[in-house]
Image (cartoon, rainbow, N blue to C red; front, side):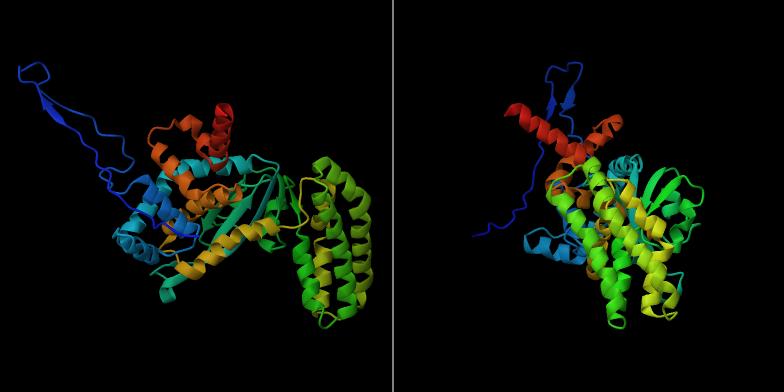
Length: 382
């Protein structure tokens, strides 16, 4: 296995200026310049795509990317790279908004959030904590991220604002911040069995017998899910299997919770686990009635690892606008990963077409739309 180093090259566009010696109507003419997304921009779309993928896919801060480019013969300052990222995020925003519409048009949204450090000179210490939210639809690659400055219900960019017009099933953890979403009855709450399981794992050291019983029941529940996936069952078949196999397990679990809770010492880890299960019973049962739902919200937490891994490298966002730019580009890069598409190839092509692509056909430039078009073209020529 050998490696050929990457090569940067200069593409020269020659535009001859011609004059008519006979003083004809157009005495001097010049070939038109090619369409450029960034006026006077010196970097091609392939370089922009590489930088975006390295920062938001490989989690490299811009100063490291600048060093990598310098070793390969292209000297670009981190501040210039930051300007490129901001412009690219702005240009890619229409695609991002189309992806948001696709997810919110579906029947199910899974969501969770994580913290992000944001520089802010107006607060003590110069750094405050913001939130990055992940929202997933049913299909692989149906995803978008958003940024909000707080987790409060009144935040104009929080989950309550994002999901204000959504009608369907919302799967999330048991955070009290989500309660307002379900008060008017227009959305159905789905819980997360992994969060429930985690509480009993925490209680296992002090209450081994009780915790083991709960964990055995949850393990049996996931054995049914594993069988459904191995057999490749569709939503209808999985619903039937759950009604037959999973419902008795869930019933036995909550009957045990109700019997055990009254005799448990308050404020212990076991009491916390039992209280969580009891309070979330309705939400934890929701997956039994819809074969499209997963029993947990693990896919959303897995998506948020893109942020968790990245923030350990780039540490913080420069301001709120930079955090919003992060949510835009991470959405596209992570969707490409989920669809097993090279983000560099995708972004190179899409960025080169943004200036001329019709706005009414913007869905063709989403990662899914772009991949479908390429597969259709490949099938037609084969």
